[in-house]
Amino acid sequence: MNEIKTVELFAGVGGFRLGLESASKKFKTIWANQWEPSMREQDAFACYISHFGNGKKIVCQDIATAKAQVPEHDLLVGGFPCQDYSIMKKNALGIEGSKGTLWWHIHDIVREKRPKYILLENVDRIIRSPAKQCGRDFSIILRCLYENGYAVEWRVVNAAEYGQAQRRRRTFILAYHNTTSVYREFADALCVKGIKMMHRQVMGAGILAKAFPTEGHGRDYLESWIDEMVYADIPTLSNLQKVYFFNAGVMMNGRIYSVNIWPRCEKAIPIKTILETGSLDEHYFLKEQDMKRWLYAKGAKQERRRRKDGSIYRFSEGAVRFPDPLDMPSRTILTSESQVGRTSHVVVDSMTGRLRTLTPLECERLNGFPDGWTDTGMPEKMRYFCMGNALVVPLVTRIGQVLSKLDE
Image (cartoon, rainbow, N blue to C red; front, top):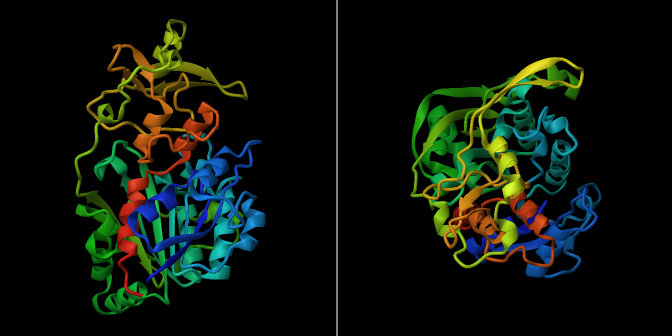
């Protein structure tokens, strides 16, 4: 393809677009949508247009309304909201939650426009969401794509295992329509070689396998057919549907194959190499009066707690390293980064030897954005929020490099 017309949903500050356009000039984003319903000020949208320009093709509206404006396109991308699939949210409802239901808007666009390719990103837990009906939500997504004529590849990727500075685990879902050559070639090979071809697609022949090379695989695997899974209405499905998906897999013509793969690891970037080396504002440094809260948040716990109904339960969790080791890639950065809490990073400042939190610029580096990408006038708290919601840009670039070489 000489040009890959791309539509970006849930665009955030433009990580997908930045990654794809870094991969090849073939990718042309012709329409994008970003809207944060809980925010009065649309800071992510403002950041996006500051880098990519304004106009009718960049829309700040609820996707429920904006989806009617989506033009014909070749590639649909989006990191659709993940809160209802995340392990960080207690009692997450998955595809039935207020954020999880946004999948159905993607489905409406897919059904209406049938793009050649779809590339989506979400938390690693989406393949086993929700906890009480393991795999229910992902099986729904596969079913929707199958009914609209797509083959699907998926892969849970730890960014640090592919040379990045953050141990961020995310699921990439790639689908290609039955009108594409990559679909036809896979389907033809499957007819001849059967499940061996599906295994080969996961291990080396597929688009995601080429972007993220593998070293080996586990012994257990899933082989099934999407039609064998129970579908009726959502309440019925909630009670009946369970399926255990592994961290990589494919679906072709409704046939599913999934297996745990081992990545061909590349040397990760230690967090010390992305830290700022100049003098920093005092507000980044830990305050003595907050130290007790930091130590409690980071420490191991064995304590009795009370539920809302008054019942008592025992809560336990292990300690988090404090401060964070500088010779390793970082943990996953979250939207609450820099606040006093268990998940925020604390490092030893190279200039002063004092403990401090990460800066917004350092969080941008951990996600592979250019320095100052979110320094567009938004409050500093929002810069952390945007990076906590963002993807690791170089991972998208790797996928884009493979996609851009497909013969159509």
